[in-house]
Amino acid sequence: MLLERFFSILLAASTLLNGSMHTAMPDKDINGTLFLINRQHSVSERYIPEPIRTTETTGVSQKMRDDAATALEALFAGAEEDDIRLYTVSGYRSYSTQKTIYARKVRNTGSEKAADKLVARPGTSEHQLALAMDLGTRTDQSLSERFAKTKEGQWVYQNAHRYGFIVRYLEGYEDVTGYDYEPWHIRYVGQPFAEAIHETGQPLETFMSQYKLELYDYLIHLTSNEVLP
Ligand SMILES: [Zn+2]
View 1 (cartoon, rainbow, N blue to C red):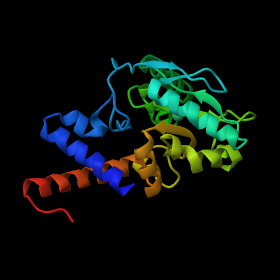
View 2 (view 1 turned 60 degrees about the vertical axis):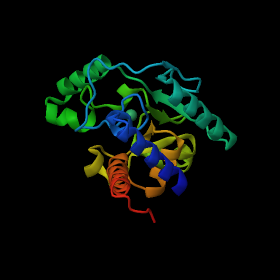
View 3 (view 1 turned 45 degrees about the vertical axis):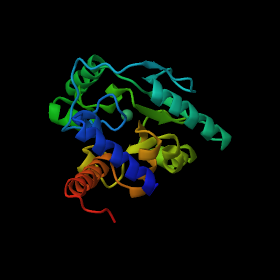
View 4 (view 1 turned 120 degrees about the horizontal axis):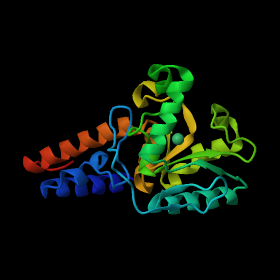
């Protein structure tokens, strides 16, 4: 794991030295898997991820980016081997869909402030990247905290990283992520990163700032010709 991490940093450093800032800083690479989107970092109205396709999974028919869809199908198959049956509830949402959902929530709650607590503003939802999926069980697809207590929710928390997913909005980190605990929302980041992030027990925001520190550290070593430990 440490070795993988070292190589990914090495790769990022060499890309950075070659001048491709966006690929070297994976939280800025929208077509990568680590792109950071949250209340502070938004995505353009014009961005449409591709290729996207319908996932071949149980539940409501939903779309994801092809790499995430393949990983999700592996996750569902793995769950089934353990007698866990998961259901897809909500995957890709376009900017305009998110705009409609947000506007409806503003109308229903009476203010943007109240709506912001419940729904992401258009351009700030991971669902727009087609890398996120909301999950439910056969009997409960209401996307509530109850999911964490079910055997399905516990399986997801314990195993999602093996398939490249993280439970994105953790309990106790609401101030960091800007979201309430959402045990049902998983985000595709790719397998080595998912393993590393799961191991830290911290959200993507924290992982990314640590990752950048390590990268800068490595670059400083490189440019000052110091020998790495
Ligand atoms: Zn979600």
